[in-house]
Image 1 (tube, rainbow, N blue to C red):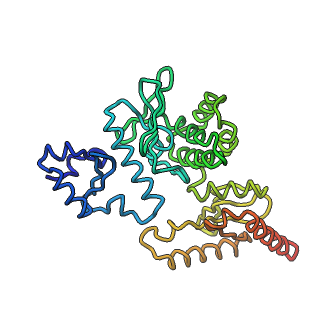
Image 2 (image 1 turned 135 degrees about the horizontal axis):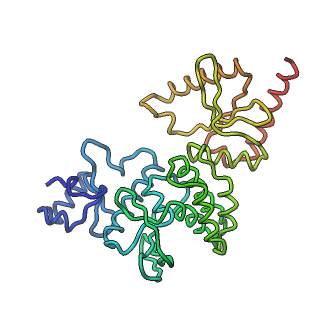
Image 3 (image 1 turned 90 degrees about the vertical axis):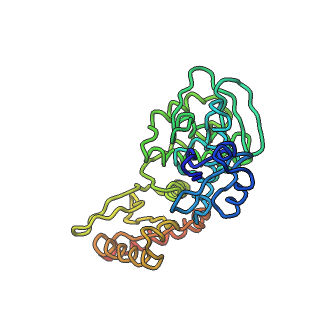
Length: 328
């Protein structure tokens, strides 16, 4: 029996496997062989044919999001239509980026009753009054994306630092806008609907900066770093050098300084080695700088948490471009 053929969204139940002739001993063998991964009691993720399993994904952020989506799928199927995915779990099903959400805990919303419940690895929120709009991600029921974005931010209410979850809402909003899964108006409407909810202040303050031009979590965080430092910049600026067009992550509105975020993912894209990608980036920067006078400032993950250091680097970059301007 090929479990992948009977799996729904990559998930199969023990009952479905047993109906096909695979009992508990066979399932344990498949787990040892890496063909299955237990998600919750009685539900398993199935390794796709001719592909790496989600639990084999080398990027830890992607791996955690994939496994969270599979666990959410298992819980949705186990509740058989009585719940929908909500908050960041709904966002994970839609393939939307997250940053610091607790992906060990699935967020669900009841369809009919108003009882909340915490169980191991899951939180069940009460149903929202009135007619609940439901969207589907791969045939799975979720709350609307705009609702999931805002309510993810509201999970920070009462926390020592409520901006952690509010920032996850911003990361998700940027990605959802870029994918066309939500509109500015829909997010604004959800912010208004939750205007009296605890945690709305931090969530509204950060979501005010939502921008679908940011292409990654790192770029959303770089834009936030610019705001903290009082830097006014424009994302995704096209620069032409001869017949070639380059897209720069951020360009300062006042000085010819481009900020480029260096994420790990770009060094493995299209099968190229890190050395090949770095050299290509250097050549691109040299071409753009020689023709336009733009000074490049590269930012890596650890520096996003050190605004003072980045402020000093930015001041040095400003000094360089202004000396060039006086010498010209």
